[in-house]
Image (cartoon, rainbow, N blue to C red):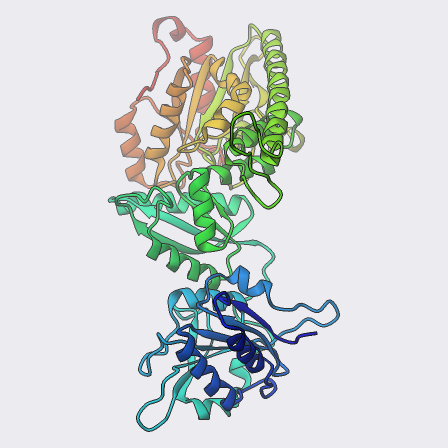
Length: 558
């Protein structure tokens, strides 16, 4: 069995050249450190003869496992040719590269080669020029992976090739655990963003995206920004920025890239090819959060429908297991593709889910008819604005009746209705129905809005909408505008009343600003209980007080 494998740009090589390269790959090097100088000098001669870079991958025993001809095009192809023993896992790779592009005064790794080499995760990388200077010396440089460096590599030593071949690398260059690897079990996410002309707006959008990632259980490790200009229709980001992103993915050991823009299927495929890493856009991230949060059967039903509608046009085609339809008159090729079967299966599943959603709509309509005669109020607002906390503060008498209220985006999805009892002197308490609805967010994915139509009907059919705003959030004005615009797009005709929450944690300037926007805003704090009695008194006057006939409820429309 061959110990080494010759791969890369081997087509066009003469048989004699292939035999010479194979003989070079079978030469043994010192164990764990250094290299055989004679082998590297002959390797340099072959680089000049073939006009192609050559790369050696050595294991810890000094055996050459791969001789790669040509540039390091893709890490997937490179790693596929390396052996992996089921009984003994090979570790301690050493990478040796010689190329005509390497200059004696500049042996720094090129960006693309650095990315592929980081995927190999070697203990060291020896780079040297194929030509010698007038004194017959070949200058070389020894590098090791270092996530702290921008290039991902730090220089150990630059010296003559003969000296580095005898170099004792020591502990820095042969660590047992590569510094780029992490023991953190969470998904390590790199954020890829396009920044607009307004810097503060871009930073707030980035903070929201980081919050979404954390809500999904991921861990943001790095951010790559690019100023928004003329978009590249193939990838949205430029090629240079994508190479920088690919390097950052390796430096921070990221397992996923998330963009702040919705991507088309072609753009996702192109980005994954450039980065050699899974890519997810903001809409898919929100769908993933909804899938994690859905606890009831109705919630899971609607989330599955939204996911299928989103992924239907994003099915990848023409893989190894898929056949192409043949051309010609009267022929249809070898048969149906697997892609067509998948699409038909998804279409049938969508039709089945749509029938169940219609049944859900009818069921909730019957529930609303049973509650006819009681005033209905819906709590709406931006996600994590405090709607669930307000519902608990108003209606929950014990811990068992409280709904989930956490400081994270989209903590609750399913609408929850509770009775609010307002005591009155000389009679039985007045009853209200308050429904906690799913939170809104900017650029909410269209499949999600359509799938949650049955849930949003609780909002559309309410007699009064309490628009909850978190004044402690620096971006509360944009959030309020987003909620109002989404309600308008859904055709909500119910009367709206703005509720300013978190007044005990906000700045005084926020109180003045919202007062100028809406003089009739109601101030409270769901956490501390401040202002709750005022809200109950206001609701009592609106539905049963003497002001109900003379003064209409306040409506906010943007």
